[in-house]
Image (tube, rainbow, N blue to C red; front, side):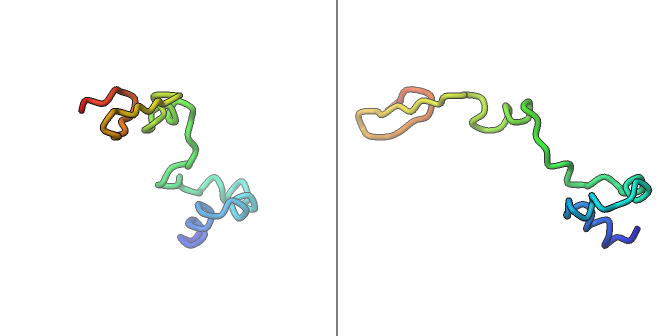
Length: 71
């Protein structure tokens, strides 16, 4: 399998589906990973820690996230 075919297989799902089992067996793993995120990964991203963020409006019209304004 050529380098061009390997990169194409990593980038093009339709091309990857057309490969034989022998080709898939020698295809190295994509260095970028699978691109799939689990629920565990999604719960750790910014904003994923509070399912319902609340915004507070202070008297000086500044907006703060998830905590009362300290001004």
